[in-house]
Amino acid sequence: MKCSFLRQSGYDVKVNEGNLQTFPKWAGVTIENNDENVLIFFNNLMELSNSNLLKELKIKFDKGGLKRLILFSEDMDFIQNQSTIDTIVKNLNDIFQNHIDKIKITLLSKSWNLNWGNIFTSNNLGCLSMVIDRNIQLGKNYNLLNLSREKHFITTQNAPRASRIYLYDFLIKNNLLDKFEYSFFVTQNKEYLMWQDVIGGNDGLQPLTGKYLKKNFDNENIVNPLEDLQLVNFTKELNTYFSVLMETSYCTSENYYGISEKSFKGFSIKKPFLLFASAGAYKGLTELGFKMYDNIFDLSYMHKTSHYERLEGFTNEIKRICELPINEIQKLYIDNLETIEYNYNNLTNLIKKEKSDFLNLFW
Image 1 (cartoon, rainbow, N blue to C red):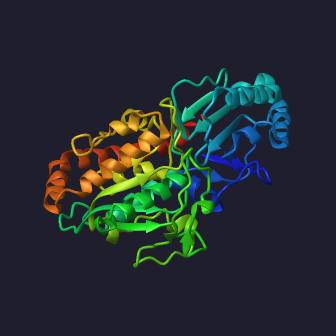
Image 2: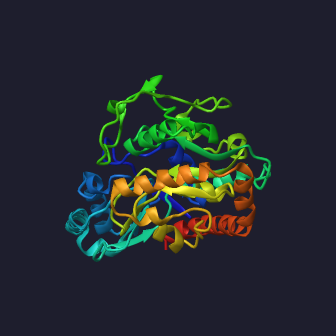
Image 3: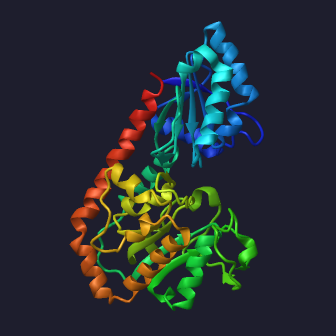
């Protein structure tokens, strides 16, 4: 399958050039001039929906050359409310009019109560599927079921979001860091971070007054943060039985789940995990066919729509698990090997489906 790629300049469409070069090839699509199919990567659909670029494409539809326009969510789209969707739908209908049935939009999130009207939409994992697959392939060089591990958890928190600083603060105050392999905020150009360094809003949390040491793994050399930090540190991962994962989006609505590669990291390396994410994460992952590790962890916190209560339940469960002896942690891991393998196989099948679903967008 061949298609043209168009990119709007400026803020409207931010595209990771690495994804542009590698994702279509990974998925089996050739990017070259093609009058019939146009693919646009986006991560700001509101801006794109009223852009001059789309108005130019409407003229190509009118002339009969253009047959399909695919607006592809490269990364998290953060579309969480109906009013935003209503504006996008109106913009697209105003521009494309009788060609609206030739537009397809992919969304990298799960929502259960949003109405896109006459716009064709589908859910997928965007370019994350390629990132996940890369780690799956790298993992084939390791014994992912190794049972000789020294620590309870691993956590990798790159950007200093408010809830992640709360996690770091909690681990320090409860003397739990010795139970972890951990890396915090390696993307930052400071040795210590404070609350004023938080990015992405304060998540409704009260400011903390501490200073938090930037900490990277001692076997890592980060050259290209955008790519290097997406790759699994297998040496550190295989020294721990469980993972502590924190998503990028923490929407409190149980009808929304913002997805990034972080949600799938545990599945790809055959490891049970605790996940802090949107309130709809549990529902979203089970709908994708995964089994959650309820028999290891108390995951009731995942359903709480209060951000603070969800975070509190998450950190309290970390503490409870850290208080267990390492031999008991190993036993919990062994007792869940069947589920671990099931989730790994479900993920690999999901990635295969992502490729075929992407190709099907062009038909």
